[in-house]
Image (cartoon, rainbow, N blue to C red; front, side, top):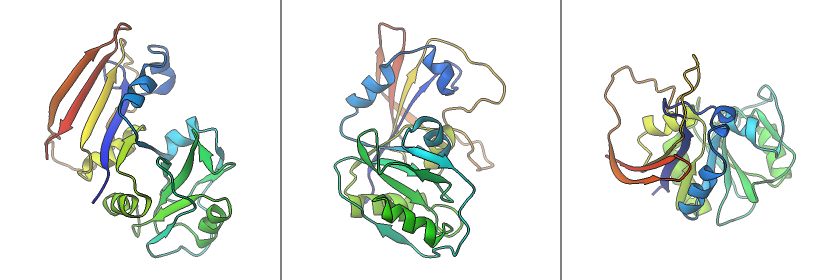
Length: 226
């Protein structure tokens, strides 16, 4: 079993997700819609977390030491919701065990050092370590459901982590808030990015609902065709 997984993103009309850009086109609509998704743990990638999360103390190179080398789970405390961070090599260091009012839970690969995980334990931060070279997202989601009781999960950034979940076939729903503006700058990350598959077969969606807000934002919700 795994959680019900929703990708929830705010984009420009051309699908770009740069936070300073979309903040010029919107106010708090993204977070209002996020609340409407119901009780969900929130998951972000390392880059988004480092930029947006005030609980991050610093970002460094991976800590030297003996890699843990096996699947490991540590539950610091149980909660109805978690702030979940995907940090493959353990580059983020923390100044709190909570973010956005919920316990932090780190998902890392088995390449992280034993000493890094010990620091998390001493700070009261939970973790899931799975995947030899990179995180095994499918297994991580199973462990998240089984050991932490996470039934619903919202991915809130960024584009590469959304792409990784799409590539792994883990998404159940795509929630898109299209802001009334165009970015167009070269090199900006798209809502789904970094997928390595060489073919061009799209991930097919079924439109479930459309809402036009009075700020000219359009909220689209799709189910993912399996």
